[in-house]
Length: 329
Image (cartoon, rainbow, N blue to C red; front, side, top):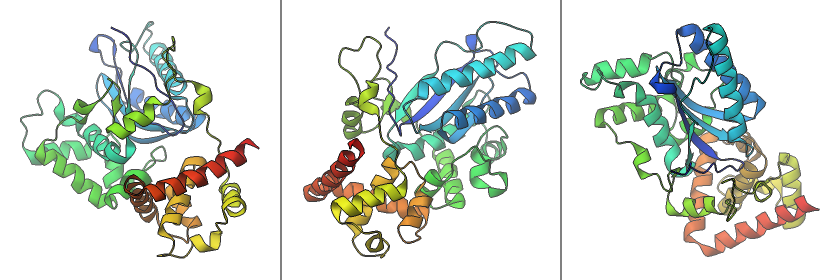
């Protein structure tokens, strides 16, 4: 069977999972787990990757990440080599720790990242022996499990510096709402969202599938997208706003007026997110001091408008083309 494609592009979201060879444990004790997370933090910083959620199981792990650059393979290669080296050195062993390559599912963030985070966090109660437990016991197990990011999502006291919380919390309205979201999934025993995977590695709707396929080079023997097609300029926010002011007549002052120019504010928010690699909280500060949840809703409403209104879509494409042309100069 052919190996799944490794599709990489700036801003891509992935669900990563990796299993121990012959299903053996990949941690001997908590010292290994602490080292695993410490090495993960180093790799995240080195490769400029955002971590949204994780869970460490006995013989495998799950990560929900976003790559700022087209470098998921480099990130995972570095991290897996570093941890395998540590584990082998500490336990006086040699050879592979993991069973083949890691699995990487490309995630349509707008439609699935929230659901995937919940499914990941509930992984602990799917192991043998826990499925028959009462709901209250399952929830205590999920909530108190120390090797998952869920504790830091539902209790700010446990917040960890390696987790980027804004995206997921903004989708539901904060930590208490996310706790209720996870508990509801536990009560309903939600199905595995990866049953809807397309092309073996893509979790998204048909529009997302079309969007992703543009990154593949036809006939590539290496089963990799063309990097030249994926390069995205990273701009300082003030540079982007300057391009919009000079090329499109969009002034920052007009963007700070709430309730006015909703489409225009949506266009600028989307461009800031795409080209400047800044958080939604930082975008909000540039749009009159709105919070990250308001930015998320602004962008979501704007994307929905683009799907329904061809004029809005054309306006966005015209403005984005102005930005692209300025970057090439």
